[in-house]
Image 1 (tube, helix red, strand yellow):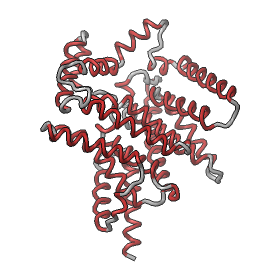
Image 2 (spheres, rainbow, N blue to C red):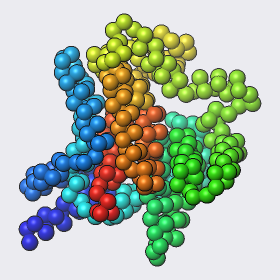
Image 3 (cartoon, helix red, strand yellow):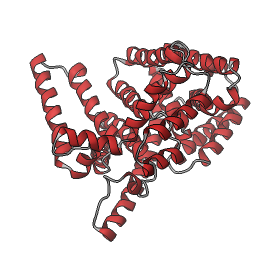
Image 4 (cartoon, helix red, strand yellow):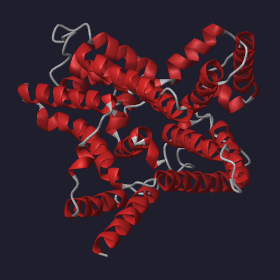
Length: 395
């Protein structure tokens, strides 16, 4: 009886943690603490066991970075980043006890949908008051969304995939899931979330190339159709076109991107600092403090526009790319390990399209964001790593 009560309580606390994740920074931590206590009360060593090469590779990466940081005496500063990776691992361990993966996915989907619906309500109120949809302006649009645009676009992609997966299951709810998929896709287009739009088209391309059974020449036609559809979406929607810096000619487009896309400056600074004498190709810089200082020095010296320079220095932008981030702090060793993690994931999950689609979504998002810098990102990574790698029979 006690065991059953603890099991049900564990499940309900997990669902609570997932649902509040999209609306609060503090409440998920409360759920995490309660789950940790319940986990220790009914401790299972099996939760630490895994046959996944992907998780082993990620653990090796974490151990390498922590040991390297400790040897250089920078662990206290660098741990601000590494604790995010540790958090993701701990969440995946805690959720090992959840055997009903279908319900777990449903809770994630409900959380995503609620977050999107509230954002749509705020957008509607703003539109009726002003008559405009300001989705080409990052600063203004973030005030209308519960999460920053890249992150709410990202969860909309994850929700779209979860909903689409449920939609193909023949049940009395499959039409509702189809409708939900359409709403989430429309939301991504509405808010002009660039990386999310690219991700959806990339996933569709992978599906037609590797999972859709048809003649090779038809696959080429589908690929061309997707490309034309992508161009049509970008060119036909003013907000999306501006987000992709579409101007009258290539030169103006490149100039616009250079002026308004922070990553062009950030990634150029990241490349520049790899030319410094204290950067090791094999092991990178000695820690994140050096990387942070180098980025700030680069912003101060390379940005000519004074207001833009002050903006970059006040925001203290990180690398906005997890691969570049690991390369700078851990050299080619860390970069290869993180890349190997994704290669291993693709090999392990290649037979399941929806799992591969989620891997692609995370891969592309890692290219434009440092997920491990954000508590929210670490929670998502821990939850979806479990969903991806959990035993097949539990689904």
